[in-house]
Image (cartoon, rainbow, N blue to C red; front, side):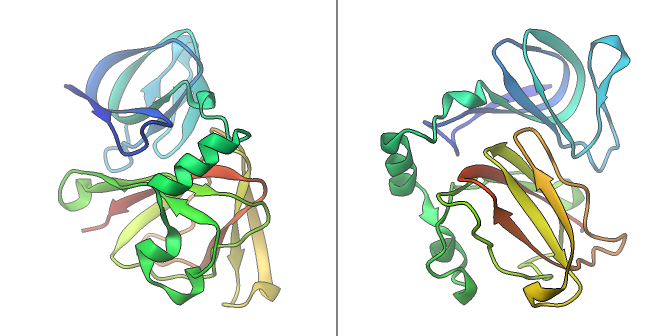
Length: 217
């Protein structure tokens, strides 16, 4: 049983990582993301409701139970992206996507990434960070391969974004758009072998989203 106070998104967000916690009290409006994908454990809510693995809920004034692995973003709306001072502070503290990846398709994109939080080993290894996009309508670049073998989904924290899925590498052959507002984690795009279609994140409005990576080995 453990509750870790995480600093990767400070001072903008208060984030906790919980493991094997029997119960958790949620006061102010907060986002709870169930990370227990490998164990297939639900987080239980009052009235028989539940948060499925790799899904999220926005909750307030409630006690939840059976938190096997969870991320809690407390009072997430406290981060005001309409504040010029907040936005400038994010840009100063977080690195650009290009600085983080070194990938040419990321050069000049208005994406800013927080440091990563990592936990667990083998198939229990999870990596999480937050990404701020300062403009709407900006795609991150189609891809289907990653720097290591992991399952990935994205949770929208603030604003609106989408995952776009393509038949081919170019954007002319989009066949699905998965729109996400705050508290939404898109459905899995990878198959049982971990193979991805061509895909990319695209901002709809300025916002913050959370990539969640779970190692496959």
